[in-house]
Image (cartoon, rainbow, N blue to C red; front, side, top):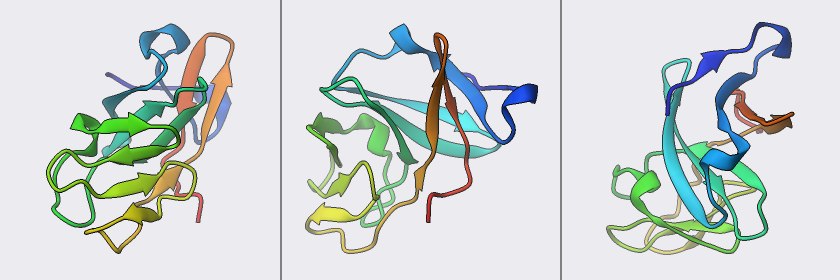
Length: 115
């Protein structure tokens, strides 16, 4: 997905339209040089986290969404989509989670971590 700066949205950048990502799916996007995994959970909420697994340094956007977690495809590490904290081994180090907001039919992400 390509991201377009949103001048009047502060630090937020448009990453896609709300209908571009189905519930329970994940996609990769680049925002200001940061590669993120953009996730829409089963309830329809959007989340943005770092796209690199903290255990194996592989792309999390190729993983599986399960409730409010993202599972790494390589070794099965699971990360909470709200906090970025690992909820399943072998990962023990959190990944960054980023603010997401919806503006009309656009999904916007800021790459200043929530922590």
